[in-house]
Length: 384
Length: 119
Image (tube, rainbow over all chains, first blue to last red; front, side):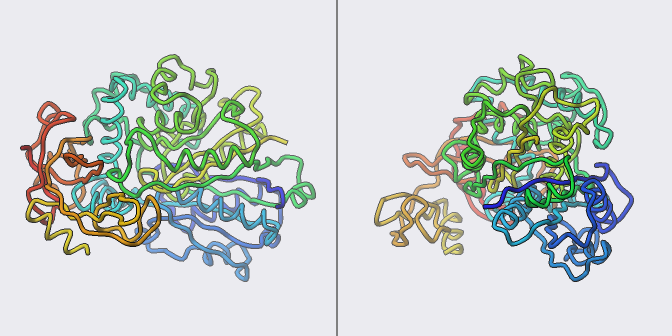
């Protein structure tokens, strides 16, 4: 297996964007190409992750992106795995470079939905659940995670204040990220007093619907060394699945696919959770970050809330969780999110994260899942 | 099989498939055993009664559910078996009305999916 590296990264701002889905995908891709310092013609394939291109009248994005990058002859494909599309796409690109099929590829994730409004997005996102049992019976995504939150609060005697602290922390981090969607300091009371979306989750427990695109150039170590000194090694890649429904799981306070993906990624990297300096995790809702940090092995089951209370997941804590602001503050353009996490790790490990730099970080982890964690990918990165 | 499952729900029951090799119980929409991979099943009809395993009360609904809002979406653990089923439970506005562990039952199926009510 070839060693695989991230050679460059680019991203649009996340938020409400005016440009089309095609334009933002190309903007992020050009950013990644310039960051990598390569000629577009050196790219051998494109991996495009997107869920709702239909909302902006453009599916089959790959050839449109590749043509505008001056490489219409290069193959591309689109990958959809709900909110996990970006990391799943990254994994497929990783596997192909690791196998030696390609020396350098473009991985671009993108989404444009804010123009559709809350009802459209709430409804269409619910199609990412097992619709017969969940979306079709009125379960929104906030509702599904609220059900996990209810189970967690009941089992571990945690409180809604505990959940709110996750939002407060991630908003603090996002304040330092010029590309974040919600750059606004909030308090625990702001979260508790925000409108209920699906009890016990309130508006500020939920990530926003965002537009945005992120892209990276993934390549073999040989290709990386020929082009730059500023690259990052991908040392672990893992994937896993969970029962598609919450009802199909024995425990609703854990996400099986996260554990499987993490175990596989740690094994490939030859490290354990203790070796991770910081992580970008899938905090689509505050409860998700708590569950994630336990399932990834950073804390014992039920201890994730205590870690947040003690500030152990803050920028100055034992392990900085979501230095970018996470989905909660940075935003969640669902097809882009998993790639955007890699952009953050690349910037952290190559000295480009500015004010939000995690001190002395050498190893970063990304964790991104689709739906209620029915599909998941974890990747581990190390500075050169 | 999905239609038979829906027909059973309409009469307040749950059609399950029991693996003839390992005995693992599934809702009837599965084709291979999730425990052992075998594809031999025997049908087993359960009474659609149980307790709230977890739930949420939805105030920002997807399309089609506006007129029912607020309502609960509930995961029910079926009495006597390690199997759960989820569905719509109307007329719920506050968590005090539906604590985890509350007794509920299946009452039907319509455009809101599987319908549940408090026992």
